[in-house]
Image (tube, rainbow, N blue to C red; front, side, top):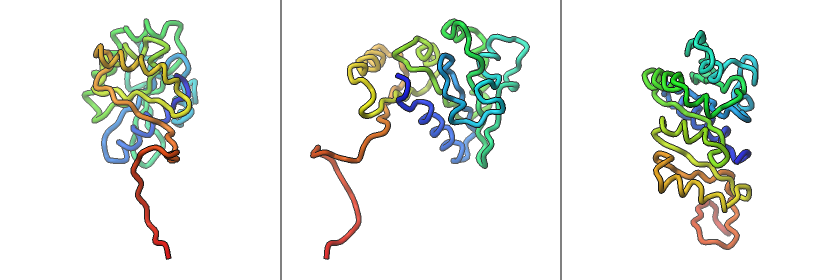
Length: 187
């Protein structure tokens, strides 16, 4: 669901890989309610020409929608672009495959920020192109009942190599079993 930290986490994964010296492409594919422009500095903010523009307009070249983030470590970003009338239909366009093929040939890693998987089918369409899926849940925010959705997708093989990431976990153990480590001596 919205607010669990998918954009925050995916942007940090992309930036960490770039800092490590890898050539990284970071793509925004949440075409319905994009937050991409909130974590990435784009030339025209949320109005920056991006992935949807490329898919809908055959005159736009892949390189026309790739931007270099202004930082010391090179990170190429592809913003979502304009909000289209039919995002799911757009993701079935052959130009999506063309984009990913180009990125696979030119980058070490491709990190994709997607729409919430439980709300729309968009993410399931993109997941067919993935090597790994990170399913984000946020402590004291995500509805635990909705965890049956990723479980079903995992069992059915619809989300590839799925990992679940717990975001915003508190350090308060609250009497639960756990392991702690620290420094200090009592006098």
